[in-house]
Length: 239
Image (tube, rainbow, N blue to C red):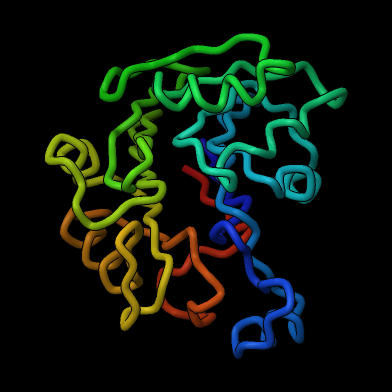
């Protein structure tokens, strides 16, 4: 199994349009960027996309134009599903899997394009191409949001999606001891917002859960470059 970080940014991305802060200036000067957060999972030639953000066309081109066999949506925020229209006239539209509230919302917007939709209950595993997938509810008020647990070939990969530190107990139990954990880290450690974690909270959560390794994703332009455990666009993990 291989995991590619197609993007590691928040809804705005880095560099932010029209911004001259230290991080955005550094990004411009060094050709860096944080596209909207999305994961590409490959196993035995089949590809699962976790979230389809508005940078999807650029991300798939950079990843070698893989054929996407299935899409998982974690929640109905613009930066996590609105890129689904990029499949129009490009390939057979992939099947979509999402918790029922997410499918109801996102499915209405893409009813012109969606072919096969598969609503799935949280904590109910389902298997795609040999990868067992489980949606796990998280705390991202007021939007119903799930993370994802992926299991294949004896490896466990967790993804918190957008969340605060207050994970439901059942979700925490599912994410304990993952080999690799992708965790929401929107802001530097001295800043706080009610819907996300900052860098310190994300690192603390990963260590509390006993993750073998972890990467911070969903990073805003406020987050400095080069901190330990920050995910990078295009970073690849092979198991």
